[in-house]
Length: 351
Image: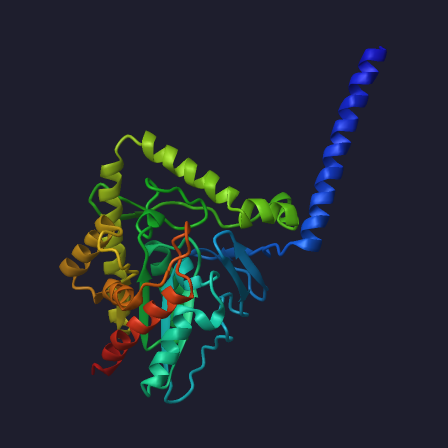
């Protein structure tokens, strides 16, 4: 009996010491370390998830990422509130996309949309640029976002910034996203919408994200990202037909972009499909080639931002992506935003 009591006493002391250690680490992080704030998402009906309106804080990740964010009342990380009313004589541009457009990785005045707006105004064009971006969005989410929400703001032009993983984000055989609309190909080759759940966060997960210790290690130090990346790689390696899946995904993307084109033509809203670009000509060569082929065969208004990144590199190379991350830093946002200015101007000047 005494041995059993000693066992329980030892377990209790071990458990208590772990709790004390965690409490000390939690306090130390709050007192002496800048820990990233939590970024909260909520359900966006018909699309997936989106930022919770009204939140603000500091977004910190390893690799030198440290920026302030402020989500407006409409749920977008932007330096201004959005209104559906128009200022007479002022043009309105909408930029849609994923985390590159969401812009948590840089200060708001350094955002692609902010750079584009300043560039247009410098050229004498009275324009305002609204950005609609959410981390993880692909072609499917962008289509529904434009149809259900963006067009309500009566934009004069829409820019879709296409990122290399936008195809897999729309296709469940590449990546299963429970909270957002994805597609498969039906027997007749047409789009087949797959069921998805409305986004919600459990009370347990919400409570854990209040902990500085959880936010520091899982998010700031990217442990959760590494776990997810390893899971994706394992799933890809065990997939029965990865090449067939990729082929289907790009067929799905083509149909989604054609539907987006048809929606905007019916509303008489011009648009631009812009590939993210890179100075390295081999960067995402397969994805870029497939997107170019879709744009060419479907007659989509397509532009590649790669020449602008290559020109910037030749003029004096400066790092424009965060090391080990892939997202643009302030320099990358500047290059892309300035590259879009003449493209957008040319479309605006068309009758």
